[in-house]
Amino acid sequence: MNQRDDGPPDHKLEQHLAAMGLRLRAARRRADLTQGELAALSGVDRGNISRAEHGGNISLETLWRLALALNMHAADLLDDRLRRDN
Image 1 (cartoon, helix red, strand yellow):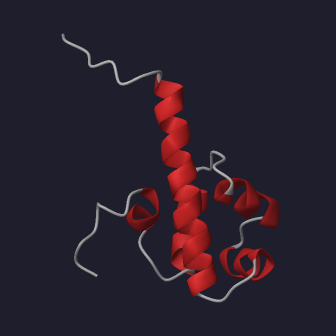
Image 2: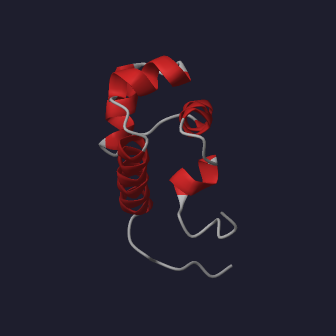
């Protein structure tokens, strides 16, 4: 099997997590919510929201809860190229 070498896998993951964090922060701000308010709406600890917005790793459940609270699809937070029907 041929493998592409696009750099270290952890580097690519860090890039995707950072981009997801930026999308999360932008969505939260568009909703005019503080991290504390989003925490209350989503049931996700404010510290986890902060970590996610700064490119930290979060669980799929956390991602889903945040997206639901922001009235969006989790896929939109993962990659803005995934959805084009909204």
